[in-house]
Length: 262
Image (cartoon, rainbow, N blue to C red; front, top):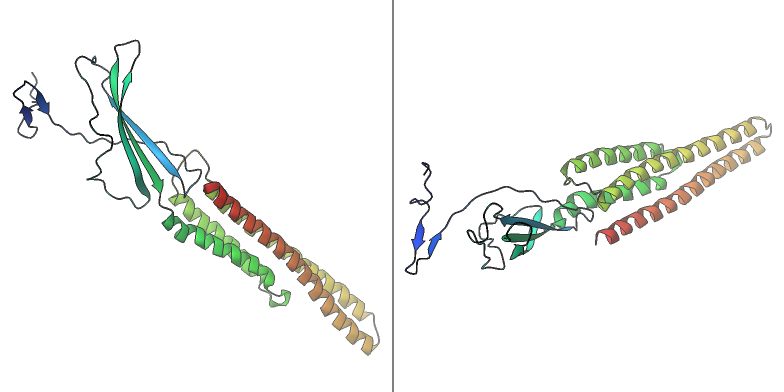
């Protein structure tokens, strides 16, 4: 016998009158579970753990499951995951070697979506709404391009922070695809604003050249008025078209993400 004793005061053993001996012991182990976060943050996972004796025959060590659920008295609540159900059952394995028993532990967990919705989804939706309202700003204000660029950079920094906090998995979540699409839409908005400004400047320059060739003061005044009206109408029409497109695209992407994750 080695110096390590199985039966000590710290590990009491109960001996019954019929010869039955009950030895209670405990062991703490760390294990990992493969998860699928495709529907994050509305995903549900099932982690299975197996305990068995692979080196002794069934006659020497017999595992038995007297309970159907796991005790969660010492379970510590997690801020990200919630345990919804547990299961404990016995499985007899028949193979080339003598049969043996396996204790299977199933733990069902799901992500708590409240924190993700308030800290991630809601700010992204608000940024996408602000991105659409860039088309409402008048061309003469000089803030259209600056506002759209600021929102684009905010998206880029915000998504970098979110990527570091999301759980890692080999599956790409629909939520990540939605966030990446919002960054792309913000970049497209910058391009659209550049087109609107370019059309506005081109229209104004052509009108100015027409005015310089006119000698009549009355006609000069009329051309200036027509220039402003034409410039504002062209830019406003483009803004309306681009704004309609972005509203449809953003709504469709948000609805698609919510449908896929539920």
